[in-house]
Amino acid sequence: MSGQVLVVGDVITDILVVPEGPIARGTDTTAAIRQLPGGSGANQAVWMAAMGVDAHFAGRAGATDVARLKIYFEGQGVAAHLGADDLVPTGTLICLIDPDGERSFLTDRGANARLGPEDLSSELLDGTDRLHVSGYAMFEDGPRRAVMSLMEEAMRRGIAVSLDPASTGFLRSVGPDAFMGWAAGADIVFPNADEAALLTGEVDPAEQVAALLDHFPRVVLKRGGAGAIYATRDGNTVALPAQSVDVIDTTGAGDAFLAGFLAAELRGETPAECLSAAITAGARAVIQLGAQPR
Image (cartoon, rainbow, N blue to C red):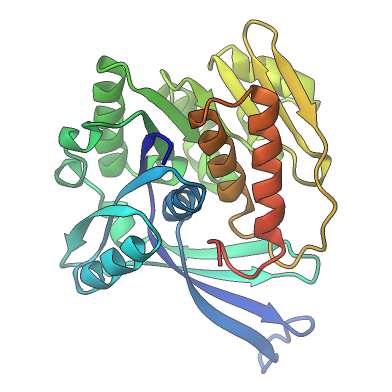
C-alpha cells in the first residue's frame, strides 16, 4: 500500500445510454442502458485503491443509500466517509455515449450539492499524505465553503492539495477567475484541453501550460488522443503521446488518468513514469463501459 489520499467529491449513480443510431425525437430509439457507480471524486478514489493507494473518499449521499454505498466502497478497497441526506437523493447522471466514445451528460447532483462542514471534519486529514479535490465539489456555495475550509486546514498541516477542474460547463457558469481564486494553494492541477482553454483563454497547449503555471506550481494537461504534458515552474517538462486503443467509452478516463499519476507519485516514481502510468490508466478506462475499474 502506498500513501494515503483523501478524495473529496461527488458520488453519483451513472445511467449510461448507448443508442444504436441517431436519437429519434418524439419516438423510440433502441439503446443499451446500464446503471453503474460513478461520480468524479468517487471514480478517482476507486481507481487509486485499485492501484494500491490507501484511498479515502468523503462525500454526501441520500440517506437511504449510505449503508449500501459504504459496502460498495469497502469492496473496492476505499474507506468511505459519507454524509447522509434525508431531504434529497444521491446524485444521478445520464450519460449519452456517441459511436466514437465521446459522451454528453445530464446531471442531477442531488445530495452532492448539499455537502457541508459536517461532512468534512478536519479529522479526515489525520494520517493523510494528500488531499485531492474534484472541482465538482466547488460549484455551489455551501460545498465550496466546506471544501475550501478543509483545503486551508490541509495546507496549514503541510498536506499537499491537488485539484481537477472537472467540467467546462460548470467552469463557464462560475467564471475562470473565480475558480482560480478558489483553487489557490493547490500544488498541482489536472485540467483537460477544453478546461485549460477556458481557464487561460489560450489555444496552444504550451501557452495553456505557461498560463496555468502562473497560478499553480505544477500542471498536468490531459490532451486525450494527443497525449499529456507535465510541467513545473522550474522548467521541468515532460510530454508523452497517448496509447492507441479501441475506444468504447471515455467516461471516467480523466479520473483514471489522474489516479494513475498520483498513485505513481506516491510510489516515488519520476514525473515521466507518473505521466506514463497516468496515460496507461486512461487507456485502460476507455476500453471498457463505465467510469470505474472492472
